[in-house]
Every structure is written in structure tokens, then in C-alpha cells.
Image: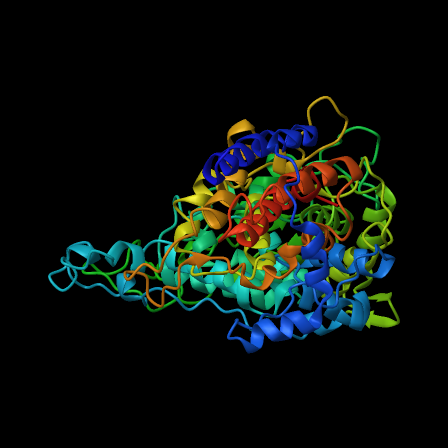
Length: 603
């Protein structure tokens, strides 16, 4: 069997291995030799130095610092990297082990780096000509006008570049979770510069206070457009934002115990339609921030023109100034202005007993596991309520209810998140497509400009960032796992097609050599992985497979799948492909480890 047909067989059958690892046996082939001498070569530093002195490129071992014997510390470091970053690699694992989980989290909370900068300016909302901005004489020939001024494509480029390259990994992961809670969608809201503002706001508030986060989200003009709060009618206000503020952003629909369980054993509503109306009236009196211009002036009278550069501004002409009864025995007194009323709205939500467990469970599901125990939710909710958390010899938070630093630390340092042992039935969650994309690229020393990851791969995987199909994001938090009593939110977009597309993405990286830079993407670098550093390790199939496993899983593959993966990797040898057998081994190992159920289900 030739090299091409052998590779085809490996890819074809390994795809079905996502459903059943035993089918990896069909990768086929016998060990054709070369591995005994390869094992010796890996340990022979003199031979390696001689090869380098003869002009061979010097390579840094990608597994440097990794233990090939499972240890609690290393396994836990990899697990934390899976939960709190966009994917582990050896330097990150070493850093976590060196600082300890609490030390690393504390350092990350002080780390910055990510910022959204790409795309055009705010000219679309300062257009005083009568035609659509991209139809103006100075733009009519700009084929990228819509992309750069209206779409989220440039923002997506920043998202993936930041996820792969920037050091503030925890801040980004929390912001990624927040954007799936405080959902807006580019399906209905357009304005590239406004999206930059919104995503930078989430980064800025990732370790701030939930109250201020709610305030910033409420006053975002993008949210104002998405859920119809901007320029709301004081006589008959639209209720969309008021409803989602209660249902999705703060307290949920059912009364909860402090540990997130149902207060009466069944769902007792936290609010009714009249409550929603009271909040809708209380939230009237807001318009776009100043700065926008149109050819016809601003409409309706008393409103600012559409503009996304800042927080929404008070609009007294649209303000209902009646007395409003809110939750938590909070009232908006008659005659209150827009800011006073908003402050009362936030008071009512932050004082509500549902908010701590509701927010705690949402964030746990995004970062750690789909099915947290009630005790886990209760412990995190307590940290949210107290505004402080002590763990690993450190104190997180400033002692004020809603402190996000305390909440995130409580999530990541909890006994259900840390340690190398876990409940096999309820631990972890299915890796969402975005994390599969970023984790694969980071593990294989890759880079990306994000250009291929928006309309192409993220679309195929059903998670195009910034373009969720509804206010419920890409999948519901209570999506049931078939034939079990468990929930698995990410399974809401997981099916036979998307399962195979995960494998096809690995084929794209490994066999298609990713994507070359697109000259039409500013600063384009393409999307590719660099396998060079793995080539020395490929001389020893066991070291290669185990190194990839320890780096990405924190443990070895189970015995039976490991044996089948090794069999497939060893098929490549100086006999089957004299010139590229080491590269083919790295491709096979990476494909099978990163495509395995052990990797796809993040523990």
C-alpha cells in the first residue's frame, strides 16, 4: 500500500473513531521497523548535535518540561489550561506548575494584551449624504466597504489572533463566556466599530463587578438595537430587553435555592408579565450616544442619531417618570430620571437571591463542567455574594457583591475543578467548536489571522463567533444529552456532520497545510501549524503519541486506544515514505489524539 492510500485509510477510519475508538484499528499496517533505532536516536544527544552541526535546523523540543509519567500536578495544570485558556502547550503547562493554580490565576487577572482594533472607523454613522455609505462616490469602488465598516469579520480576525497569541488567556476565556451570556448577534446589528467597543467592554469587565457589567451591557447601543431598548416608547415600551435582562442575564425564570436547585423542587416563576412591563417602563429614556449624523437629521424628535461610540445617553423625551415596582422590594419613585431608574433596576437584580447561583452556574458551565453539583454552585454563589474568595493562600475580590475576580477564582479553584481525579460521569463538557479550533492551533505551534475561521470553518462547525442565531446564543444551557439525565449545552450543535467536520478541520491543518495569507486581509498571515519541532520526537512513536497526549489531555490515552494510535503512527517509516515519514508520523499522531473522544470531551 502506497503512502497516499495509507493516509487515506487512516483519515477515513479515524473519523469514525470519534464515535468508537476501537475502530482506530482500521488505521491498519504493521510496524515496518525503524522504531528501535529511532528510540536510540531520540536519546542520543551526540547524534542530534552532530546532525545540527551539519546544517540541520535546530529545533526546540515541544515536550520540554513535560513529564511522561502521569503526575497529579501536571494533570491538574493541563486541566486548568483547558478550563481557563484557549488551549494548553508545554510553556503554559510549565508556568501553571511553577506558579501553582492560584498564583497563575492571580497573575492572569493582572495580565492584559488583547484588544479589538481591526476594521474601519465610525464613518457609517457620520454619513451626511443621502445614499447608503458604501454607495457613496468615494466608496462605490471599495469592494471591502461592507466587510470593513459593517460586518464583524475584522473583529473575528482579532478574536482568533488574540486567542492564539495574546498572554491574557483567562481574561479572554471569561470574556468569551460573557459574550455567550450577554448575547448580541451580527445577524441583526451592523457596525464594525461598535462591535469593537462591545468586545473590548467585555474584556475590561471580565474581572470587575457584575453590577457594572450589567450596567455597561444595558447601556450598549448595540444591545439597545439588538433588543429594542434604544429610543423606547414611554407610552408602550418594547419589552424585549427587560425580559432577557431577567431571564438570561440575571435571575432566570425559576426561584432558586442558594445552591442553584429549584426552591420548591419544581419551577416556581421568579416573575410574571406584569413584572416585565414594570422593568420595561423603568428602562425607558435612553437614546444613542451623541456623535451620529445623517442627511435628514435625527429621528424621532428628542433622540440622537444612530451611533455606537460609547454608552447610550439619557433621553428625557422618552422617559416614563411613573412609580414602578421592581423585584427585591425595590421601587423606582415617581419623577426619577433615566440614571436613577437604572440604578434601581440594578439594585433589584443584585439584591435578588437568584442572581448569585444563576450567574455561578452559567459561568461554571462555560469554563469547567456542564453538570456541576449543587454544592459546587453553592460555593461559587457564596463567593459571588461575599465578593471575596480565599484559595491557594491568596485572596481574590474586593468584598463587594458581584465581584467577578472572586467568582472566577472560586470556579477555577474549587475541588470539583482542581485535582487529577474527577467524577467520570459528570466531569467536564464537550469541547465547543471554537475551543477545538484554537486548541488544535495552539497545541501544534500554529498561527492564524482568523480569515479562514469565520465564513468557512466556524460556519461548518456551527459556531461563527459574534453571529449566534438567537439571544440564547449557539446552544441552550439545558440541552439534554440523549439517553441520560445529564445536560450538555455544546451537544446542541453537535451531530454526525459537525463531528466529522471537527476531523476535517484537523485534515485542513495537517494535510492541506491550512491557508496561505490572503493579500486582501490587512496584516494577513494565514492559518497554519508548524510541525517542525515535533520531527525529532517522531523517531520514537511512543514518545510522540504520549507527549501529545500529556500536553493536550494531561494523561496518557487509555491503553486500548493508545495501542491502536501507535499502530497507525508506526505504519509510517523509512520504508513506507523514505523522505517524509517523520512528518507523516506527526500528522497521524496529532490527528488521532486531537480527534479522539478523550480530547473532544474536555475533562
